[in-house]
Amino acid sequence: KWCPQIARTSSLVNCNFNAVYKMDICIDTDSIVTDSSRASSSTSTSDTLEKYGQWLLMIPRDDVSMLQNTQAYSAFLQAFDDLKRAHQQLATKELVKNSVADNDDHRRFLQHFAAEDIILRIFEYLEVCALVRIMMTCHRLHLLGEKSAEQRTQSFASPRTLSSKIKVLRAQEQHLGINYSIPPFVRVPILGLSKRVFVSGAGDNEYNGIYFCTGSNGNGFLFSKPRFSLHESDHTSPTKPLLCMIAKRFSGDKILWYMSKEIFASGNHPADTERPVVEIFSFWADMMHVGEVTPDLYRYPSQTSALLSLGGDIAWQPLASTSHFEPPIVEVMADD
Image (tube, rainbow, N blue to C red):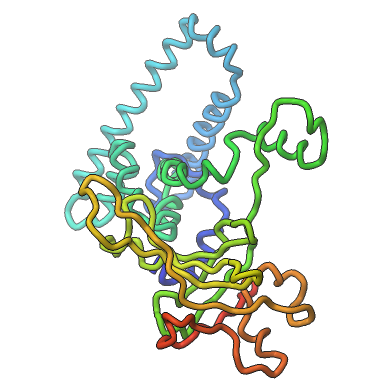
């Protein structure tokens, strides 16, 4: 499962990271100083370093190029390198001193010593819930977690979003009709429907599960879910998982909702090419009618409860080729 305890961890995933930003990357968050004066001194030092760090971030780039020619700039770089080495030496001594039965050593190693590329490689294998927990341990891992998420979602986000806020602003202008005929032009991102669709009771168990609005075709929105977990690699192509889909299609001159799934085409294919994927259809349902659902649900797949609300006994039905399968129960889920 993508996240076994999603109900219990949703609040964690959506947590406020302000506390993480306040942490100094050189402090082990589990090492709590009990002496009040030492704690006050540590806090003061952290605040000072944070203040200098914020100042560095706010320097205009033109000023940086001028500062590079000063003696103070060279002295700062040297002092920064010296402070970094001093921290590594002190932390190394602490690791050695506490190496006996200290379960925190591995975490401290990741926090302070592991190369960035190594951590990012480890993060590639973490699901969101685990990644968020790690990001809350220290400032460095929080930043690397954000970087990992950006890298891992680049191919997914690129065709669905715009690469800069300026392009988003221009898209908003086009949407509002402001200078809509004057270049530059950008595409306007389109959001899918927000509600999920829950399918259960289908005789072909692959169709059962939660569907999300993931696209559209010429007839309306398309809802899909993976046929198999991504961990079941025998059933997935190298680029994307095979899907189960719900979409509107024409049957003659009548439009209906259809439930289908992707499968690999049979036959022999060259070993160096991906196996072709074809779509097969299993179930269908009539469109919902006026008065059966609220207006905002007309764009969603026909709900079993709505189709049966007028006293009928047929909702979703199998096709002739799948008549041995029990038809599914389809319902739109409420927003969280």
